[in-house]
Length: 161
Image (cartoon, rainbow, N blue to C red; front, top):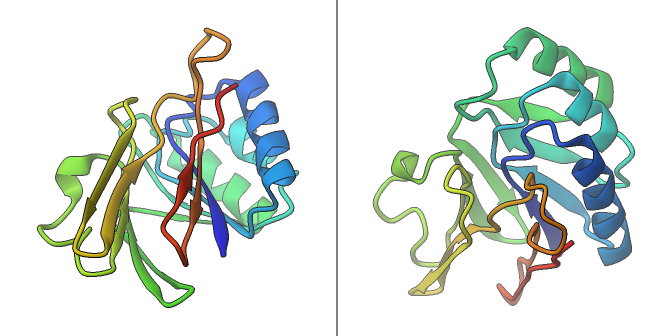
């Protein structure tokens, strides 16, 4: 199963439109947002996705009421970190800030997804993975990136836009 991983969209609506296109083209089955969505408008644009979105709040997600309403409106699962998922036989933990990860979250087949740093992270250890796709809210074309993660092989693609 291939999933899309996105972080720190920071209400950059033109980039969110492009992210939706990238995930559609990649045929991902689910999307994980690791936080810093910022505003409900962003979630409404993600409503065009062909796959369900699951995610956590980040430190810039201060309008919880608006984000919660947009998540309900679009059928998304959004909450406080850590979010724990079980997909394709894998344990997945989702946080915003990597300091929220517990020791061992990315070990022994577990997958840990985070954002916050705006820098790509890809660490493999004992069959596990710690992953942050990096910056996707920047204004410089070609430097924005999202992640596509294959939960079976743990292979990662980083489409830039």
